[in-house]
Image 1 (cartoon, rainbow, N blue to C red):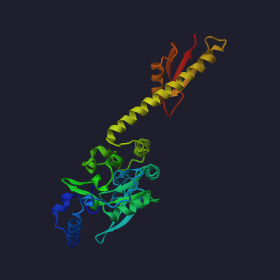
Image 2: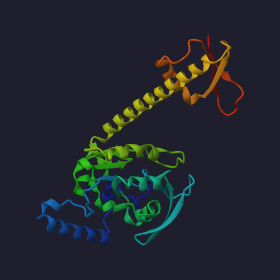
Image 3: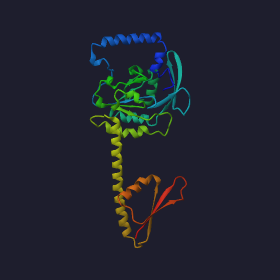
Image 4: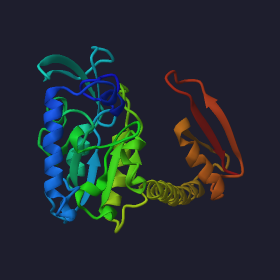
Length: 308
């Protein structure tokens, strides 16, 4: 939530203003805790999370990844929240990315889910309660678990205490995984597009990734996955088209009229299928393509195949 200096505060804003009494107190407590724990280097940076080690870990960002929040009731928000931060009441309007609940439910069958946001707990918790009502995310991490760097905050995945070959983070900001770039999937920003299908498209890849020995580098494995899926889809279409042409030829041989014409109408979305026919030499040598003007909603193409 980039416009909210209360819910999501940047490091630069912290440096420009003097800390209040509560912040000084928290800073002192953190200093003494860190000093006490320094003798145990193994857990110095650790975050207390359930460590089943039986499944890989998927870290999900919140703002602009799963939801978009703002102070104005614009863009057809899905729900609003009244939150109190430092004794001040704020009304926040939240738009949910399409498919969020199904995405989290399905993903939880393959990963241990951790929701990690750079926002404050007072805002993030009620939002997470709504988009994840079944608490599929076993762990919730907030701004205090982030690491300050020049220009903002980042999420140091090493703090989770897991083998990084088993950790993936999905975030709309590359800065969030700048320490472990090979573990990050940079998702497109979500603002208010109700036709957005990023989560639906991403889910099959994540399911596939959960079965790999090492999730790194995530971006390269994603490109590999997309390429393999494209090849398999074309191969499957070639097989279907080959079988279709064999049946068509068998039927045409039974006809007594050698000049009988057969018409096949397809949508523009079938252009790939047409190209595959050409690549596989499945088309008849006598093909005439013309537009069918009898439709109003979308253009369709008609192919007249003449049997010689």
